[in-house]
Length: 216
Image (cartoon, rainbow, N blue to C red):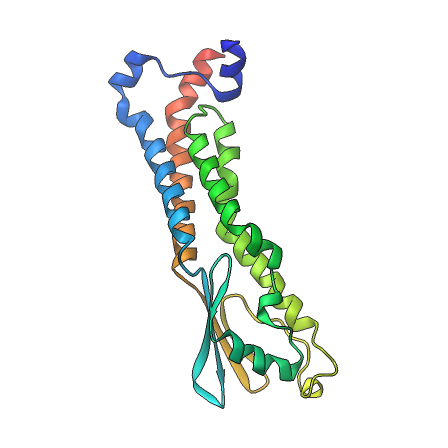
C-alpha cells in the first residue's frame, strides 16, 4: 500500500535528509504557499480596468472588473454602447463570474496540494494556477470581440459603426470614442503568483528529483 502511494505522490524525505537540508525542501513549499495566498487576496481586488473617453465625458468613464462582478460607470457605458448596438456589459462572461470564486479557491488548493507531491505530478497540479492570468485575458478578449462583432443592426447609430474588436490591453478607437484597457491589482497579483509557481517548480524539481531517481 505504501509503495502505491509513493508511486502517486512521490518518495518521502528521510528524516535525517530533511534535517540536514531543510531549506532545500522548504523553499518550494514557501513559494507555492505564497502563490496561493496572493491568488486568494486577488479575489477582493479588481483584475482589469477599462476607461472610455467620449466627447460628452471629458474625464472619461471607468469600469473595473473583479473576477465575479463589474463596478464603476457601468450604467453610463451601457447607455453609450446601446446607441451603437452593443449588449450590456453584465451579459458578458456570466458563467465565468459565477464560478470564479470557487474556481480560484480551487486552484489555490491545488497549489498547496502540490507541496505534498514529490514527483512530476506536482507540475500538473500547479498548471491551472500558473496559466490563470493568461486564461483570464484570453477569455476577456473573447468576450470583447464577441460584443464588438455582434452589434444590433437596429440600434440608432448602427449604420455609422462597423463591427470591431476592442483590445483587452492598450488603446482602442471606436467611432468618436476611445478606450484604454489595463491590468489592475488582482491581475498583477496573479502574474506574480505565476512567477512564484515557476520558481517553486524549479526548486521542487531540484529538491525531489534525486529522491525520485534514487527510489526508481
